[in-house]
Image (cartoon, rainbow, N blue to C red):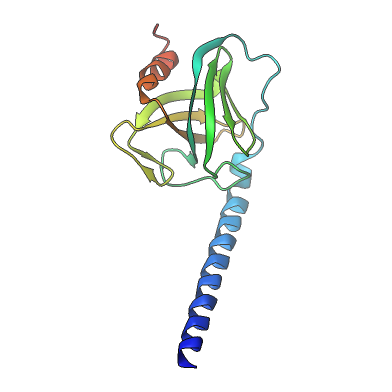
Amino acid sequence: MERALWVTLCVVLWVLAVFLMYRGWRNRAARQQDRIGELPPVPAETGPQILEPTTGLYLGSTMAPSWQDRIAVGDLGYRATAELTRYEHGILLEREGATAIWIPEESITAIRTERGHAGKVMTEGGVLVIRWTLPTGTEIDTGFRGDDKSVYPAWARATTGDDE
């Protein structure tokens, strides 16, 4: 009987912990909603493709400059397999099971490599991070871990305006 009580107590504590984490995530989203606002829609005309699509994992978006302050609004905080493509007018991040993210060219402030992003830590230069400004004026970092990390320098050069 004592064992059954301990098991029941552990299960109740686990359910309570999960509920509190879920509630905390929802409260974070409510606090961030005004700063995030509506994301730019994917335009009908993206312009010519500048870089070949690269596949990988979308790690999430964070409030700049903190690499751990994950955005909880909408589905921006959820990891997903994705394809990243650079066009003349911006960057298209197509995520599996989530909405596509369009990053307009004029919103991009930097593309760099980092060691970690949104709670994911890799080797040096293992994550491609795109810093951009939302229509609300909030600066965010979007993290992408590519399957082929050899393409990262081309992405960084495309931002600085250098030729490949």
